[in-house]
Image 1: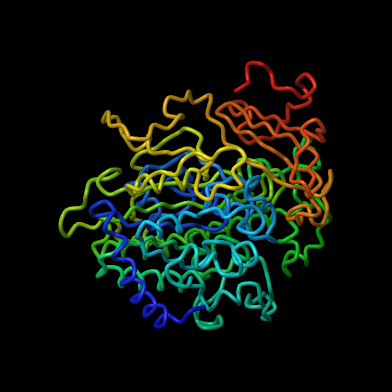
Image 2: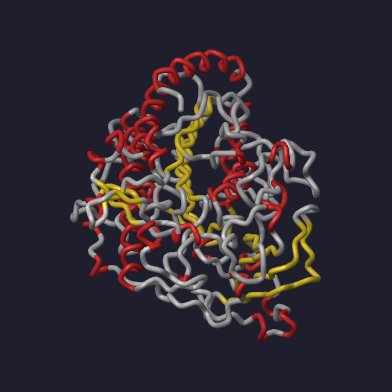
Length: 547
């Protein structure tokens, strides 16, 4: 971790070095604030969840274009982040686990922050943006992506240690970990530190003539659920319901199930003596897990609120694009699962919204605040509706071309196939068409999807497995252990998944060797509990469902 004082000195040097590259840039380029949340499903007020207290994110949504049906390409941290930060699918990055660096393993692909850096932006990373470790070269992809060394909060190292005080008065490494912040090591939490550092960087950039790209990655609601204990009060256990479908579906192929091994390793879950691989978790503990997830979301909301309020106070809200998303969702008991690691909507669907000053909301008047901090404990705060919404299916892959286009940069071209030799291209569609709002304007680069029928739009995801039945490593198999790959198609009408043989040495899927399949109809089975795959001829899609 870089000490803040040294980081700011480094930033001052960088600011001087990028000025010359701005001469060819568009006048008054917009800044970008990219907020990436870990394991956040769309359990937010702005997505219609009436239980969740998320007033600050809801306020952002009220000034944004919100995508109701956005999907990640693989429901696990490193593969998803590398995918949307490079604009390439996991089959192109060849990252399905945590154990390789795409620039060495697949191709020297450009990233979103790298592209902005090469176009004169000062690019900065705070918190968890890339997944740390081998998958980002133990450097968060520095120096390619960032103008200054990325910041990681010092208290991050305590996340999985024994800092959770249990009923016995002792400290444990638990799944459920509401804390008194004054009692934890360093007297703070990672997301609090990330917010403070991000605000320091915004203050520095306020006086800069260079545009900035600031990515802020928040840890919560990723497990363990370690958050300030007062947030539990927002969610009394008597108000917490179980998942609407807490049982493992009868027709679910075993290969599709993940045994949520990471939460089984927590001391409080170990004490339950759960059976492998299906559990189930006792009902009272299920409610406690859901309570702590929701409380973690509200804690996250306060950090987002403080960050956006600071952006407003610095008078940067009228010159900064804000994008808010998550790397994937998280199952809270749906289908008897308690993790990501699947192709279901509950783990692949993510929040996605963009605030564009003067476009998704009017420019604020002098002295007007768009993002005043809202206390989630305030019972009088109003529930805010999203400003604008798009219902079409979109993919997180679209983040790269969309941010580039919104900032006025040249949108990278579509990738050829294969594209391992191409450093700059994109496999996702450009979402700029959704920002036209009926004004009849047209972007210079027409996207082939512009005239697409909603029934032709598809979101793809995939997930690897080591075997046809749940194993200890089914959730996160290493590349060498992958034997089966589940490729999933989500349309407006259905989710269709085939689990096929996969050769990890050649990175090849054999679609003629189908191990299992799933077919769920969205209208009649929105929770995806009734698998109709075996009810169709040989597992083929009915003609009426063909894209």
